[in-house]
Image 1 (cartoon, rainbow, N blue to C red):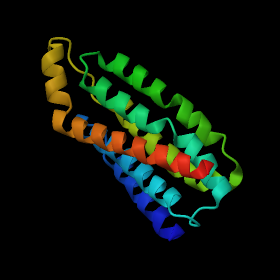
Image 2 (tube, rainbow, N blue to C red):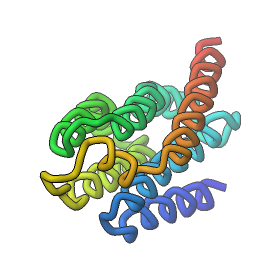
Image 3 (cartoon, rainbow, N blue to C red):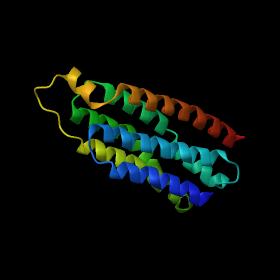
Length: 173
């Protein structure tokens, strides 16, 4: 089962890396990161699949990700300039990336997959085509990111937040 988990996360990350850098591909890499986190939370929820000590460390390291995903969808829907969007969004993930890098060696295998998916998303965001100065902010936002996809990602992040809260509560018992 552990191998299957790694393969699923690796495929999601690879999809994000191979996607390139168009506006829709930015959403694809964001979705891949959310999916990788969902898979990991699913594995953390299964008793005995991941040793309890490692599970708690990983749970704590990814605890802020659902909020970061939700903040990201809100920022992508905003009329902020691309540079501002990228800077704000990178900030949303800074704490989680630092926490994932600081996990003990026996938890690194899990942390690397999630950190890789976040980094792939941030990389695709940084490489997204710069908009021309003569397009309006409203047109720019509508053309860039599909509102339905953003809402779907936001809903998945909200559900992930609930699952992580339940997982943390169960780990405390």
